[in-house]
Image (cartoon, rainbow, N blue to C red; front, side, top):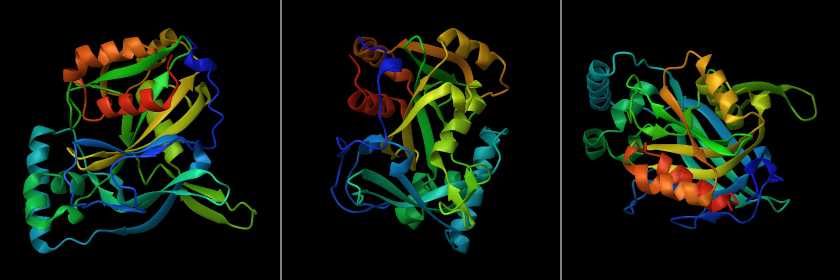
Amino acid sequence: MIPMTKLAFNVRCYVERETIYLKCAYFDICGCMARPMNEIMIKGKFGRDCLKVRYNPGRQSYGHKANELIELKWNEFLELNPKSYNGPLFRVNKWSDFNSRDGLQKIELHLTDTDYKEFVGTRNPEFIATFGKKQISNPLSVGAVLITEDNKLILGRRSSSIDGSKYALSVIAGYLDPQKDILHIHNKDGSDYVDIVDIFHGIEREIYEETGIAAYEVVELVCLGTIANRKQNQMNIPFCGTLNISSDEVITKRSETQDSEFSEILFVQNDLRSINEFMNTQSNEFSDLLNSTLGIYSDVICIL
């Protein structure tokens, strides 16, 4: 077996991607076909230059009745999750994949603003049945399959203090944060500053916050496509990252963090047999997106 730490991603982008579901230019958040709970929309290997974001600040406008229902569902949610709080999120309006002029396959996301209260209030069946799927918050989340230097996948068991999938097994994951993941950088010609939404920065931040693993310890990081989570009504961007530290070092770093999203860290040997055995024996403990994330990872990355 070739250890994942030895595989050369050579990423800007790879063409062996595949779009699942419909081969059209854009996918609206309210498509009318019946779909599985978690659907892989695009899969492949996409580097930083192959993940484009168009961000238009502004919020979805809700009427009085919709706002009343959002407030009701939020208050009900807080009774069950008293440690939760409202915070800013990005709303995914639409997404596409396309070939650029230089021949690379790319993903483009169109984002606006939302927040956690709108997400909780609009994701439930009562809201969707009353106001339609076009009105959902549809926030953007990220997750990462991480491979240690000694060739093990990092997973975690979610704690009881988080919103969904309490006690479930999951990859490192979280929501993109407009207060943390909009970077103020120079234009390429150095003439002016621009604000960009950096999704790679978002997953690096989540990895550090939840495990203590710093960005410089992730030696390769690649986007694997897009996943539509129909159960939670949100969109996820899965990543794969190889580390230059061992599983023992990960345990040490995790013990030094203050994060409470995971009650424990687990490791799975990074080979197809071990991953399949893990999925077959423990899938009943998986979070909403873990099965899809492991599926897209095993499809896209060469596991021998």
